[in-house]
Length: 165
Image (tube, rainbow, N blue to C red; front, side, top):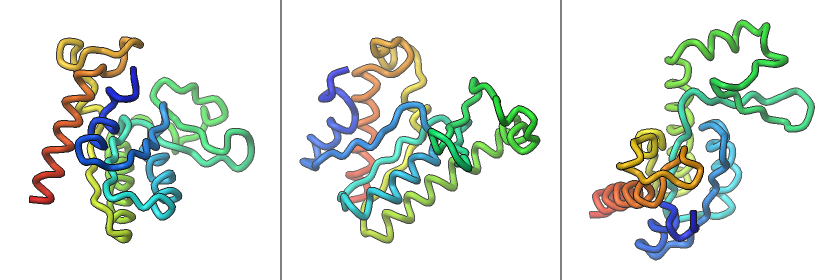
C-alpha cells in the first residue's frame, strides 16, 4: 500500500506531527516494548500510538545465535523448544498471552509517561482483523487495506481529541 494511506501517516498529517513508524512485521508486543525503550528517549515524539500485534506472539531472547530474538507465533515450528514444558504451557494457555500483551502495553505507557509523551494503545487485531467489506484487504489479501487504515486513524484522532479537549 502507498505509505500515505497507512494509519500513521494519516494521523501524522491530521495532527501536523512528524511520523516515526517503528512497526516491524511479524513481531510481538515484546518487540514493541524493546523498540519503545530504545527509541522513545532518542526521538522524543509528542504522541506514541502502539498498535499491539496479536496477543499469541511472544519473543524469546536466545543465548546465542542469529537472530538474537525469536518471535514465537502459533504457527511457529517449535524446533529447539519442542521439549520445553514452559513454552508448551505458554502457548496453550490464552491467559499467558493476554497478560504478556497487557504488561507490554502498560510498560510502553509508563515509558511515555516518564518522558511526558501522550500514549494511546490498541490491539491492532481488533481494528484490522475484519471482513474484506469492512477494511478493504491490502494486496496480500490478509491485512487491512486503505479503508481499515482510515477507520483506525479516525479512532486514534477521536481518542486524541478526547484526551486534549
